[in-house]
Amino acid sequence: MIDMIKQWRHVFKLDPDREISDEALDQVCMSGTDAIIVGGSSGITYDNTVDLMSRVRRYELPCVLEVSDLEAVVPGFDGYLIPMVLNTADSKWMIGQHQQAIERYGYLIPWDLLITEGYIVLHANSTVARLTGADTELSTEAVAAYAQAGERLLNLPIIYIEYSGTFGDMELVGETHRQLERAHLIYGGGVDTAEKARQAAQVSDTVVVGNIVYSNLHQALETVQAVKANKDSV
Ligand code: 1GP
Image 1 (cartoon, rainbow, N blue to C red):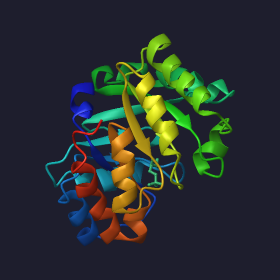
Image 2 (image 1 turned 180 degrees about the vertical axis):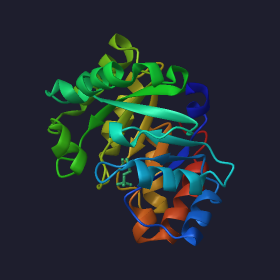
Image 3 (image 1 turned 120 degrees about the vertical axis):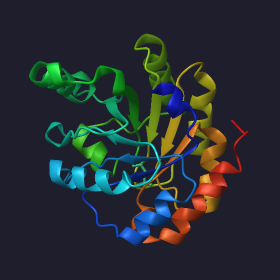
């Protein structure tokens, strides 16, 4: 799983709770992006997840589920991303929900398809920050230290800097990246133009593009080439 993810430079994250036409989905899947992540912070159900997965499955693109709701874990994805929020004082989002999932469904879990992500949530005014009670007021040093704690103490293969809904501080992302030795750094949040995609690609290993797919598909599609053109910059 991690070997596959390490190849990804650009990924679209699609939300099962939002409408996307067949035509738009076709353009997203044929855009040259490396994979589709299915995920969102609210309104995710088994039915809307199955529906989106089966539509994306028509394309030869890796499709993984970022698990946020236990009721909406659908079999048939190529992999399952399991977020652990590092910058929250509420241990439920770090390990509690995971413990409950294993207690309830342990015998069903396809362990070799799971991959954990150390999430650092930095946009205070986002659903994920409010939901998880993330401490978003962090210095660059503090964020880099969370990332290193995730990589070196918890041995997490992925660190995900999440600014969902706003474009983040690229210097902070770059400095965090420099402090990592092994973990793969994913950046997501507010990438809605080719220029922002280019900047994000310079400081991270994988750039995730979400919201703009639903508000300006043309600009969303432009982010793919902008990221790919930066292939060798990290
Ligand atoms: C959200 O990181 C992703 O989980 C992408 O963020 O929706 O702001 O592009 P945007």
